[in-house]
Image (cartoon, rainbow, N blue to C red; front, side):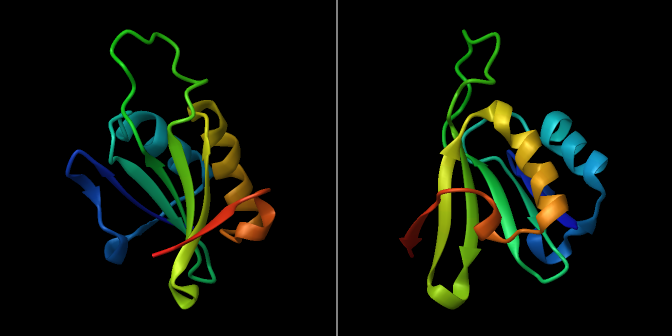
Length: 119
């Protein structure tokens, strides 16, 4: 897998995605990306398919444990179809989904029910 991300303007762009293993990808999500609207982590598999974890909203200041907040959009861009598959998940689900991507690749068919949105 290769990873790209953005944390308030800092990170690695998708055209410079760097090779990572599962531990490194999990660390980037946990330690490099803050729960701020617009921040994201993307993973590109060996078949050039992409999965992205995008904060649709920020974590409120008064929340001590944000694992239950469903503010992360899991997104599978499909330029060939002119859209993407996605759904919102809780922050606490992201590590499991990252691990799933390392097992199955960034193939949307392995991630449960998703909705397709045209661009």
